[in-house]
Amino acid sequence: MVDFWSGLSQAFWLVVTLDAELVEIAVRSLQVSLSALFLACLIGLPLAALIAVKRFRARRFVIAILNALMGLPPVVVGLLVYVILSRSGPLGVLGILFTPTAMIVAQTIIIVPLITSIAHQSIRDLWQEYHDLLISMNVTQRQKIRTLLWDCRRALLTAGLAGFGRAIGEVGAIMIVGGNIDHATRVLTTAIALETGKGDFALALALGFVLIGLAVLVNLSIHWLGQTEREGRW
View 1 (spheres, rainbow, N blue to C red):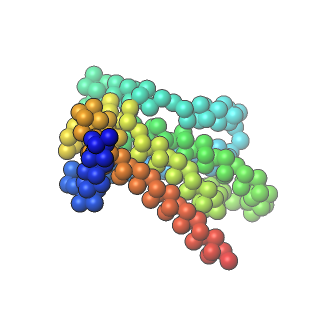
View 2: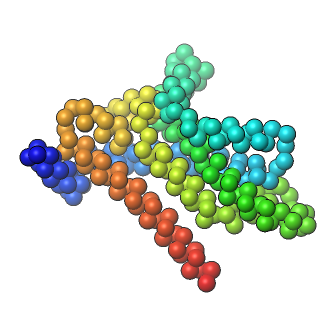
View 3: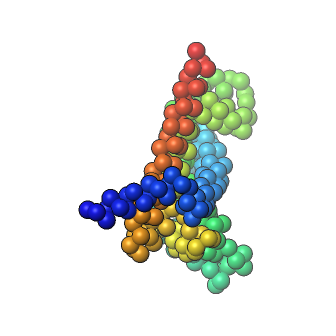
């Protein structure tokens, strides 16, 4: 019990004093996860709108695949990315394995289906309301997608939040492709796993506090944005 409270107090002190190692790991985690989120949104949001607007023969199959990929095990993604980026792989010439870039690639692949699927559900409902109006205005496919994405932006924030939560808490895939290298690819989740294994519970708890704090901060930001938008409408 004494060790627990001692570790807890040390962890709190590391957070309060902004320990250099703690800050470095937290900043790298944000850089990797936010970069992956940005790329995933660039891919997933337009794709979700396109699936909602365009009618094609394999549409239901594509939606089913996206929903299935939401539960894709991260370690499988990490393994596939590792094989592709390894020296003997098709993209091994890039030399980005065990770098933050490889971690961003893995996280992007993991969260694209999640963001696309959640966004599609919201955009599909809005498209049912806008369908007749946009068809009567004879707008292009691109204009339809832009309109739906803009008017559905609040719901899309939820998709982005879900994607960020999945990315920032991911450990399996980025451990495989990043290697958990100190001062290079070590992020919050991999550092927590490492420090727990070493028995350094103070640093592990401090990292955990930061991870929880980031999740809470993102949720509060999304809530604030939603409140601001609702007040603006009034």
